[in-house]
Length: 424
Image (tube, rainbow, N blue to C red; front, side, top):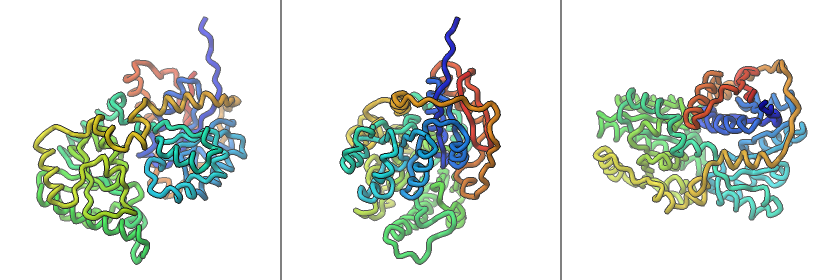
């Protein structure tokens, strides 16, 4: 007779930006359920509400600015939940002092049982500032970047092939200019130096895109603005460029894999493209020692002029070769910032560490309490509706990779954008 597995700890996985975070959280959830965790996953506000109504468990913080972090973690701790954290913004830290003050305040860090770091760089910053908290910091990487490794690329092949069939051999241009080109409108009249820097970059890229469109009229160009950017400003500025499309939807991994090459300036997607083995170019028409984001630029080819960039484009459309091999990335500073270059998968290390916490949760009620979904515009653009079919499909693709089955996983919708995942 088979021994029944004991269902125990509840793991709460909040998601703020669906296109960026969902797949990584589902990856972690898939393997956590196999370890007998009950996972509550969904839009952040929905998960936050669930913390008040469902059993005590482990809350997986995604990192927040200081004011939000203080409110979120203190209230969650007060409810009796155990806190762990992986700061989604911890890969690139341009200002150590500002980071420690705004996202890694010591008083709030003390509430956290385990702090998962992208790599040794982030880990060392926290440990040096707060020696008493050193033992709770672990350099594990991030499940988001686990998905870039060869093992999991099959998750994205079908969609990437579909995008390539639809759009052709396109150039992908990723932007990060929301500090000026915010979705609520351009920030005019600002004298803030960082905003002025981003404003200058924004218009440099508008000019560049027009030039690329003109020089390569038969080459499709896809512009993918940051989720918090204003899409309409690009559509207006580039309306005369017939081979340019502005598309903000979807997981960026699909778009990178489908593209011929990637252009950016200081974007995390530049690192993702390099890890996926794609040709990646950082266009840097001017430099700022204070405001440039070094790491994504370091793993890219640097084009400081349009002529340089056109030369790179020509070379990559003439050959299928890419110089972004694992060996090349190892020679950059990326291994210091991202643990996954030198070690295995973050999800494995995280679940191993979670198991050490030995948190036990009482059973969930058969009938969940009535939870009213949030209806704010901010939630709508950051987190469009999540359907059960999306989870089922993602798990089925992971089953193919692992040559196993998740047919015993019960996926229950608790309310809009909130699900319970458990092994029966």
